View 1 (cartoon, rainbow, N blue to C red):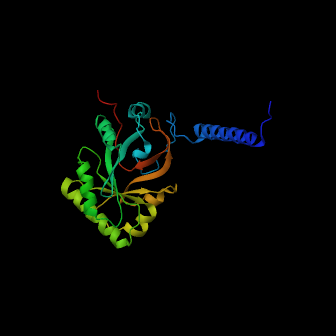
View 2: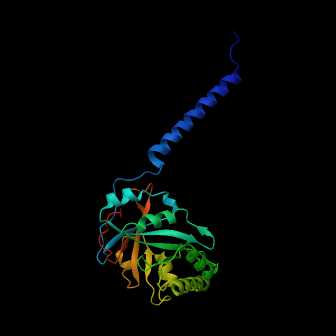
View 3: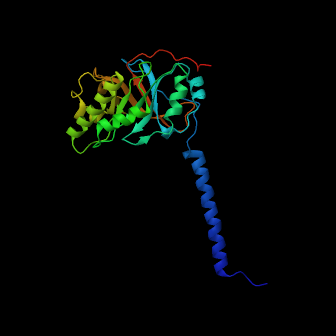
Length: 248
């Protein structure tokens, strides 16, 4: 019987090594990386001056098991915001499902638009309103403005155009979401009469004591039942009250 050649032996060894590496990679992903649905929660206690817990979601959370979420969260989570649109063309793939299910519960909920700088604010508002109709029974719409424009002036001008258009057509004054640094350096004092939702992962609550600030996103590492992977966690100064089970 002819002896195996050195080349065939090398190919077999490389094949075995490749299979082993793939197996190790799969088990590493399965055990440590893959998104999972959580049965535990990691909410922080409400700081002084805040009254409610909330989350915000988008297609990044995938298809949320709202039944599991509502069942296990009891009265802990009082409000939810979901992404609807971005720029002038993007529509979030999960927003209609999220809106439909939450509309059949008494959990407070509302929609947000991710603002694209240096693009017409009015056109972005029209895109948002073509998809979503703000209702007074829901939370005020939110303008998510966390990306710099070519100039601060263009950013503020575009945001004001969006806000004016949405408020003019809906009769509801939107809330502005942004980072702490953008609020402090670019927006504070420039939106008279508007409330802010500030993202700040610094535990120092003095950053969000301004009267203009209504919500505080304090973490992007939340774990809650019904959601695979991580989710943003928020405090609100508004007391939304206890939630109620899904309607039949």
